Length: 280
Image 1 (tube, rainbow, N blue to C red):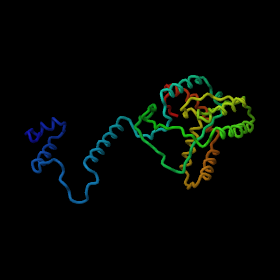
Image 2: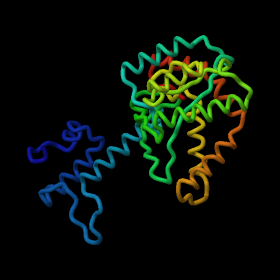
Image 3: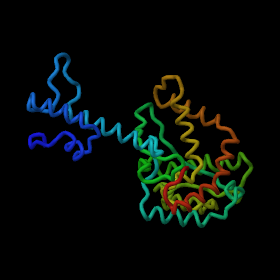
Image 4: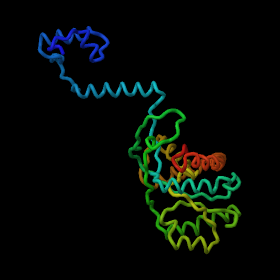
């Protein structure tokens, strides 16, 4: 436009520039150098090229715009990947147990396993989210359940020894409780199913991809958080086990009770989310 003789005010209006003075300065630079780029300067070379600078400016402007619209950066929540079938099954499960009271859930013996490591990256990813906004796919870092170090035979041994011994310790019979487990292959193996039948243990039918419905998951998260906060160097699996066991044994009855009392709300949240992600 400069070459075609447009006035500075006309150029400013056409390109949306607020000040025609900027156009005058560019025009002057063009008349003197036949270019509008900045002259090469002496001293230390630039660390960023023009493309990098433009990218940074765009991102800064985007971030400020997002903040003005009530969005803030949040760590993505780690949740299992939910397919359409998973969502349907979760919703069906929630509707089936929506009328259970806290007393009903108090009968459940919860089980789960978790992995702890010394110490790697926490693999955090970030997203933009409004305060109080329902969890959406963009707020989630999908996870896949790891296989763990147990096989079906060892799992049945734990049931025979630790689970049954725990019932005896608390003077409970198998008729007093309902056992919860996820759908890991070692849990659903034919011989494992046979063990439950032979010992007359009722098993809670569990929805796939639903750690948000298992209160123990929150205890694991608390253990992991407190483990990472320790100001000690942990060397080896034995030392790790000692620290995890100590933290676990420090969990209070009040904490566990509150988690069980949250079950009706968890079930309702699954229904509200139509089987999708929840806040838990």
